[in-house]
Image 1 (cartoon, rainbow, N blue to C red):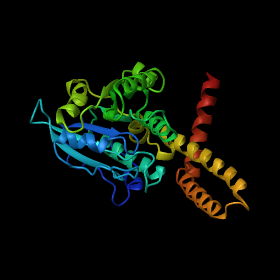
Image 2 (tube, rainbow, N blue to C red):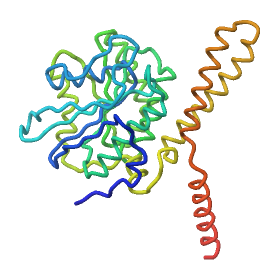
Image 3 (cartoon, rainbow, N blue to C red):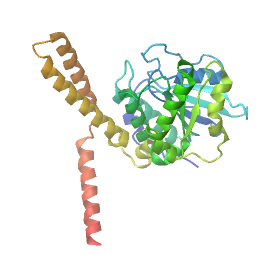
Image 4 (cartoon, one colour):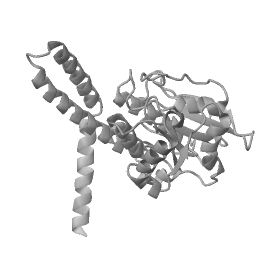
Length: 309
């Protein structure tokens, strides 16, 4: 069946954006998502049995844009497994608003071209003692991109088990299951461990539930929002959430600036620059006035219609 085309594709895409152009109906497409430095590229290299994407060994991101890695499906060599390496929402060099646009463009383009996702992997570093701010932000953005209905197709993957004692890792995993991941697991998400980064079998063990699932995966919420419902990125759940986060961060920076005046001029200038960059992102995530007016009119007409019933 032919998919519904993404009407805003030309207006949203920029030079250098990566999309999957040669997709086949038999492809098994799996986005790999999570914060910077969590082991996404390492996992993809392990699955492919060779280095196909650059691995970062510092906090700086090596995945600033979407990258594809194509592997042969072990259980059916006639099919391709396409692992989609995505940047985290704490990228070293790219603004969060641009990261959102990169991911949204890829997801909407593939959906508009009738390429269905088989499942999604979300990675978490088990060596982290707590869920820090960037980890929480990445998880929140991931859930808003997916939507509740698609969470049954998610595998929550923990990494870097060699960096913690087993009992410590198990305790942290249980905390994640009972708190941050609790709702997702209730919606059908599964949990897996990527234990041996140097062994392809360890990666394919993680992928096995997706490969074994014969049911068609549900479209992600942002795919529906952009393609089926004709929204712009700033109008999506993920766009609204990111805009609110950036506004909160701007407000905190402005409070800090007051305390820096007359005390640390260098830090004050740095904070002013950060505020300027944040405001640019917020401006880019604003819904155009005409779209806001149209939305208000439609909402008003629906309310009036309901009231006349």
